[in-house]
Length: 218
Image (tube, rainbow, N blue to C red; front, top):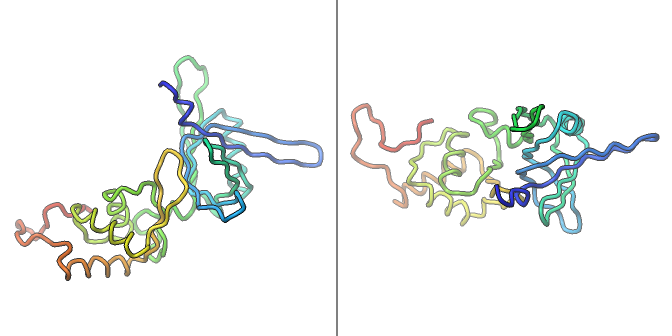
């Protein structure tokens, strides 16, 4: 893959004790972070996809679970931060041709991002999303909160969220993340208002079984 190194960043963990200094680095291909406050590089991370050897990944995950700070350096972006309480980790191995040992891969999620699955936290007031495309936003919010929606409403729905100031841009590397500041009740009200104003419509002709064509399967 030509220029693949330009699509990679680095995550580093440094720990200093009285007698030793531990310095561990690994490659990352994707991350999501909160915007930083003025004059600081401190932030909260929501997602990191990282890979390396057994020692590097093991030390990195230990630091994450202990709530210690890690540093991310990706292109022109350099950040310090943590994943907060109870991060979720998914691990896998990557067998690379020409190497005797597989590379280790880990995806680390903050509790907030992990709870975007259906039924995990129906009372949430904020949803972190990996991508800002209308189809993805509508699908993920519908899947999380069980919203009755049609795929063709996606463009209108996201435009309405943006018009109301409910979308926040997040920091991302190899992704385009956003956060949606809305509860399930507010999202339902927005959909209801759109139907009343005929900005969106439900097809009148329905097949047997009262199933609406194109309705997202939730």
